[in-house]
Image (spheres, rainbow, N blue to C red):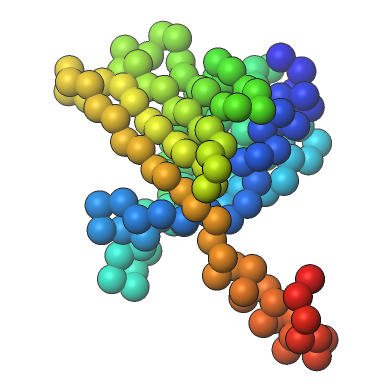
Amino acid sequence: MNMLQGVEAIRWIAGSWNTLKDGHEVEEIWMEPKDGVVMGITRWRKESTTRREEYMRIGDYQGTMSLALQHGFGTPLDVYPAIEMSDHQALFGRPDDTRQIRIRYKPTDRGIFCSITGMRDGNPFKTEFDFEPDTTVAKKLMELRARTFGIHKGF
């Protein structure tokens, strides 16, 4: 897979997204593709406290288009090679993984959908996130722009 074409195919992932999951506010931000790489961060919050964070990168990893995840600073890198990257989904997984983990992102009419499936302790599991655009980010940027430049109209 051509690295530049791969990340360009999933340009739809870029944005600031949020959802609620198990009582947590989950925020996920993906940057626009540049130089064959898309980078993102995820934050889980509950009761005004960050409970979990993830750092993500989609791009070349040792010659293979992959999703690389780090669950907080100092933790080992989890790498999932791309199975498919297109205008309708990004699917990642390791063929030799006995846990059969698959991470899928898809654009929806409301935002982006993410599912993580696999095996845990010999049992199948599925976690799903139905992200919608985080309108508070745009609002905060407009407020910052207004304070900084004295501009009170939208972008």
